[in-house]
Image (tube, rainbow over the protein chains, first blue to last red):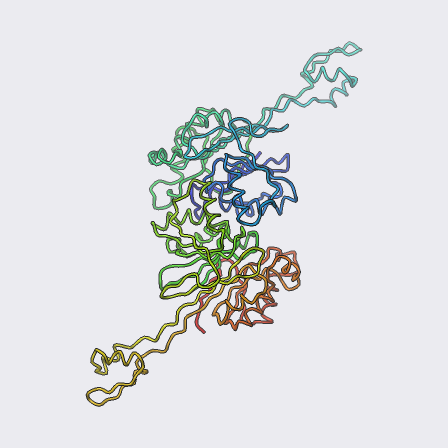
Length: 309
Length: 309
């Protein structure tokens, strides 16, 4: 699992930062998922290592323009790349109406192999490898944060080693796989636990944007290997954050701390923190690190591995 | 008058070319107008010398995504820059519904000081300096080409020279301004035509995209100083052009020739003409120049003065 930031600005694009978009790569599947899709996300994808033909799922947090205005164009372009494969889009109520309206007015209705899923708190997608769930955050419109939990891998049974020890294939294999001890016809005792590799804990990734500090963020980020949390403002601009229902870097760090996350990445940085403003994005980073040291601040195209700790 | 290309690709963006967008700068007014607004147009504006605060009018040719998916985001960002000033948007029926749908689903309705004008063939805007008119082109959906005609300037009266010659201010000035000859009390004859600068013909700019070859393009481009015409395909791909109702470079050149335009700029180039395809954008240029030598091919950020000939 690897995440790549396609946009890290809040509200409007700047020369350096595009509006919201984040890719989660699942190399073992040859596919990737997108979280939010501000205008120009497809332009960022063109300049990345990502292939539109491998994009299978899109998760939208909320229906503000800086999170969805890139979706119609991305789907129109992606249609060409998808080769008939269906793209699944998840998001709050209203998302399907929005897309339908865009397509209706642009003569494209019906031509996109897209399935839109309206999410409710709880599980939104699950298969043999992953569970994706969401919870409502606290913003000015209905907004969902997402948690992607890789399933734990039960330890692999070392079948070659069992064969080398002379265990006959059949029911004894099942016992060994369950970690039981068996006795072979020649009297040897074999401990199954020696033949099963340790269980591999699944990795966890949480994405909380846009929101002010809330318990749902903490719950989504519980024990996450990587928490990506919005940090639109510095704590000095807390009043702005409260009024617009955004977070300060301090709030993001508090979420990471309370959730016992392994690492925090700040994104959705206000365009106000440009040269000329005495506060810089680096100040947001230092502010968060004072509370939660394992923090980074995202920039466009920043990539990081979601690694087990 | 100066035009700047903000996007020159057809259908989808490429690394080098964004989708449709063209700025017409009117430096004498301290404002500029936009023609079409594909996704990412505001990103191109950020990287240009153009200021969103000086954008006053937007003309949309048709409701295909590669010409309008950047409009909601541009208006949302532009609202911040406009300082309460109203932005006028002109385009085919359905444009207002599209924008309303985007705003309705993104909590932004009512917050944009935007006035949408549904255009009909003929004059769409006129003031003391310019007349903008449109005609229906031939594409898969209702599409309009635009012509911007600067009004002719009557020659300036050289008031300082009249004073130097001892003409008393008053009714004699009026006669001189009209080019008449007057006799001063001291018997000198003064020819008004010597005191009035020659009339300045207004400049004319035409924008025809998307369309296959049609008479309306010729009419819009009549005697234009600059004609910007789509040239999605090479003549070798004429079948594709006819099927999708686009133009070849040859068709664009024929329009320029028949309209007696002064210059032609090709844009809306198919992304198929990339390395690997034996046909290149330069081939489109040469194809057009064989018919109409005063042709250029646009690239993103290409700027050119609309000069009187």
